[in-house]
Structure formats: C-alpha cells, structure tokens
Image (tube, rainbow, N blue to C red; front, side):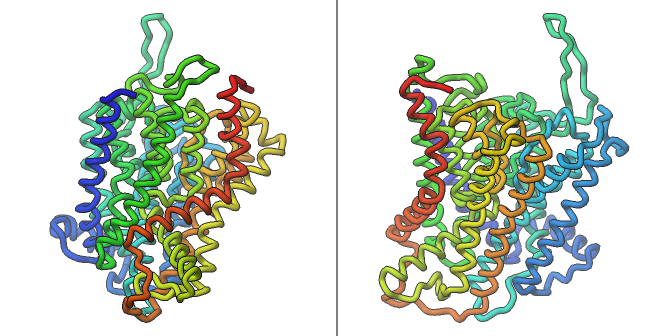
Length: 563
C-alpha cells in the first residue's frame, strides 16, 4: 500500500463526511413534507401520481395499515417482474431475441429485486432483454429502495409522535422518496457515469473479430441508468454478469470512485436525517460515528490481511481476481463498502481475496444491514440495536429503559429480538442444510473451508439482502433459486414487520421528559456500548460458523497449506 492509496481513502472519507450531513437534513425535510426547491419543480408529478392512483395524501395510517399497503405493493411488483421474465421473448426491446427465463430463476430474480437484494443467479447481458432490465429490474431498484426509506420514516415518526395511532402514509412516503430523493440523484449520477464511458444505448450486440481472428460479441444496452440507481439505492444488481468489474459498467478509476461514494451516500445521510427528524443532530451523529468506526475496523483488517505476505504464493497483494485498472486497495475498499451497505455490487471476486479479507466481507453482511446498511434498512436495523442497547443498559442500572422519551417495554423487546435474530437463524440453518445435501454440494467449485465459505456467504448474502456473490458457487439451480429466494423474503420482512410494529407501539406512548437519571443516547458512552452489543451479538451468533470457514482457512494459509 502506497501513499496514493492512503490519500484516496482519506479523500473518499472526507467527501462522504462532507456530503452526508446536508443531504441528510434535506432528506428529513422531504420526509417531513416540508417544501424544498424540488417541490416547486417536481411537485406536479407527486400530485399527478396521487390523482391517478386515487391516494389521499392527507390520510394517516396505523402501523398495520401501513404494513398491509407495503406488502400489497411489494406483492404486485413481484408478480409483474416474475411474469415479465417468463414472457420476455415475445415482448419488445429484445434485439438479441433472448429466450424466456426458467420459472425458478424468474422466481429468484423477482424476489431478489423486490427485496432490495439483487442477487444475480443470471447473466444480465446473456439472458435479460432491454425491456426486462429497464421496466423490471431498474424500476424495482427505485421501488425497493423507496420502500426502505418509507419504513425508516415510519419508525422515526413512531419515536417522535406522542400518543398517536398513526405513523404516516406509506404511499406518500414511497412517492416522495422516489421523486425528490432517488430520481434526481440517479439522473445526476447517470450523466456523470455516461461521461466516464458507461454505455447507455439500445443497440444490438456487435460481432467483431479480434486481432487473433476470434469472433467476439460486444454487448450494448441502457446500462448507465440502471447502474446509477443500483448504487444509490444500495441494490447492486449489475447490468452485466460480471457487475462493476465490467468495463462497460465501471470503465475508469473515477467512475469507480463515484460508484463507491454513491453506495454509502444515502445510508450515511439517513443518520443525519434521523437526527434532524427527532430534533437532535447529535443523535444522528452518534449513530453515524458508530457505523463509521465499525466499517473502518473492517477496512483496516482487510487491507492489512491483503498486503500480508502469503506463504503459498510467496508474495502479498495478489492481483488474481482483481481488475488492473483498480488495483488491490480499490478492490478492498469496494468489498468493505458493498458489504456494509448491503449493496451487492462487486468490482473484484471476493473468492480471490485473502481469507481474512473475504471473512470481513462475510461478517459485514452477517451483522445484518446495520453498518450503513441498505437505503433506509440500515437505519431501521441500527435502531433495533439501539433499542436493545437501551434495554440492556437499563437492566444494568436498575432503571426502566427509555429511548428518546419513549419507554421501552416487553412488547418492543420481543419484536426487536425477532428482527435481529430472524435473519441470523435463516443464515445458519440454510448453510447447515446446504453443507450436507448432495444436491447443494454439487454446485461447489472448491472443497474444505473455502467451499464452506462459499455456501455460508450465499446464505448470508440472501438473508442479509446483500446480493453480492463470493464466486465459486453455481446458484442457478432449482435448489438454490427457490431456497435462497425464500431466505431473501424472510430476511427482508422479518425485520420490516417488527420495525413497523415497534413504530406503532412507540407512537401510541406518552413522551417522558429527560431527567438526571435518563441514560443519554447521544453520548460517547452509549456509542461504545452500542458497538459492544453489535459485536457481541455478531460474535456469539456467527463465530462458530466463521471458524469453520475463513478463520481456519487463514491459519492453513499461514501454514502453507491448501485444499
């Protein structure tokens, strides 16, 4: 690692820290229904959507009504995308005449994009028509991200409102998130990416001959528009199968930098949006620092591990599986960013990382979308941990736990535990089953601990709604398409349902003024305890499984042994 690598990391951090607070405050204004510059420009679109969809924007919803609307909306999106893939061959914008997808791959992909996972068991440029990519996958990139922001807005209102049965209107939150947040930022990023050489066209694929005389197919398509929202919405589904390592998706170091920044930008900004909405920017800053610190620890370990001498290959900083135009540090930086943000896009193969670097990427996902996390999902996931931390701290001092003026009781804790442990159970049970069945083991490319990591990573990526692949596992089988699809559904909604239930409960409670005995949740002490709870839950839950995978593989590597 040289000085230029360090300077780039510092510049990345500086820009992220500079942009997140003002963007967060602006997002808070949007979610609170306050007027902004964009309201005057795009407000007519919002009103038109309400009129066409017959939505009363002034109507408030209980948490159950909010949840029912969310589930119905996601169900309709799933059905549409599922059948779009099944019949894409007879639909327009298919210049390559791609065939229809199989039912199990269509099922997996539809679930994947509706749940903001964007797990890719398909090859984008080899299977998906332009129409499927545009009105199917790209549209869901917007809708699934907006759903996450809406749930975030609902839980914050639950904290802020006093003795209220309502937590807002799902349709309003969804519409405003798309029109005023996701759409403007996506257009801006798409223009910048196009300037860098990311393709955006509707051309048929070209068949050319290389200097060696071999025929090569050059794909085309509307890539920039999909890539911008896939990063900003922490979706991650690439237009091309090799994702952000493909030169048409990510051609230059600057496009690489822009996409990494886009992945963390909104999740980081939402911490400050939270602070603004609850009336204390210090609350948001505390959560941001917790997320930033945990991410920085993982990044440091990954970089150290990747540059540590590998006795098997007799060198360090191995370039296998990485793009020359990005180098080792950009690959490691991306791997930690995409896994803490549940983004799923990759610019290198995680299977080619050192065991500890790959292990950090895996552990980031296992923590459950809370270290920045998905758009909206990271914040409401972190709030579950904040509630758990307040409860445990209250037990230690013998005081009724409170969070921002709302008493935390058994009802909230039961839902919190379900939301935290639900995805964990799916990961461990799914990995255990896949480690013993011949039908699942036949998809492995490697044996030993590395092969186990491939299985564990796939289940973590699905249940954690991340979508990135470790590589080395053929997931396009009936077994994995169906079961990983089920894991994505559980991983998404086993968190959303508890969050909305908690939001409804807190909104209905009285506000308790702070006193000298109130445990401060914007202090350095709270941040340290919160980090401790995050690591303890993660370590106790996943350390045995990680010991069988990347940890033991690291010790074997240091001993010069391979499988």
